[in-house]
Image (cartoon, rainbow, N blue to C red):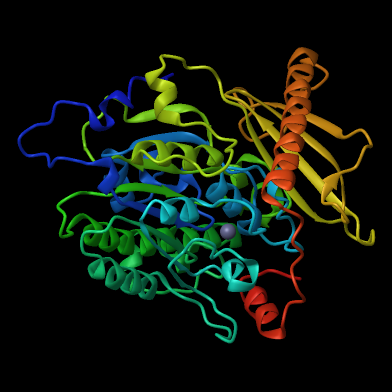
Length: 453
Ligand SMILES: [Zn+2]
């Protein structure tokens, strides 16, 4: 197993070869690419057999690839606020589409804009309409606006708009966040060139056909990611931006007979790709096979850019951990909340506690008035991912020591989240922000991506 080696020391301080441009962290831009519902195990760089991702694989070859990155939620609406604020859902409480991100939190975009960066978001996600309050901190926010109707934004048009914007940036550093929806159902784009991945018509069963369609969409997005990378790397300043590529969550592809995401926390929905390409191609670590979290992305990029956060963060800077010489195990927490079938307004609440080998799943209820967990004892399940990566056998009775250890971690984490939430309430005036009623147009748009309201 590879650990965190001394990466950070080389981010800006390594001896450079003659061909490498000088890099000034204060002038370095950041490109954040989120491919909705992209599973790492369907990428070439993760060992997948189909030719889904030649360009992402090339990016991975010049990046640090975190092979065990864990999303904090299986839904865009909950996962993205955690990625963009470095706060767990238990703190921001954007669950189940009922609440939206309050203004009092400081997003990555707000932090970078306060430091003089231009900030732009181009998103195809229907969960990032302006009414969800996702646009905090962006000078430019192009996506679904109210009144846009039921239109899907394919990678092609997103990239065209994003590239136009990049070309207008002269010397001012920027944050560019592009969110692709093509790998999310309904997997509509066709194209003969995608037959090199697989031919959906050649498969008999629904599972094989649907998986093939999913894989073809990865290849489709992959080509447009190449265009985006080429645009950001050929800019007037001669500096390459930091590039982060991830997904908000994974996707069930027939595991346990299920399709989609949102109501479980198994690996197929919380394990996400995470690539971090630093401005210099050379760094001593190319792959980290230990658990890292989405909440670590913001502290890591802020540190690489030399920026201070505006408010407390719950993640860690993955690069300075290395520089400190420490390599302790990180624990990832993921959360999901959704209405219980036929049980009124009460919400089902799941938490996963995941370390490098063990995973505890806790199931309880969430109080829909406060969006905080109820007091009843949770139902607990323990999995040993080393011997049972598909999470089929509950080993809680066989390994009480790990059950107890992860329960203690869960309880410590809940205390820490409560304290952080109180801090934001007292110091930043944060309160729960409820979403307004959805208009019929938004309902239609969400239904077209397979969401029922
Ligand atoms: Zn999503």
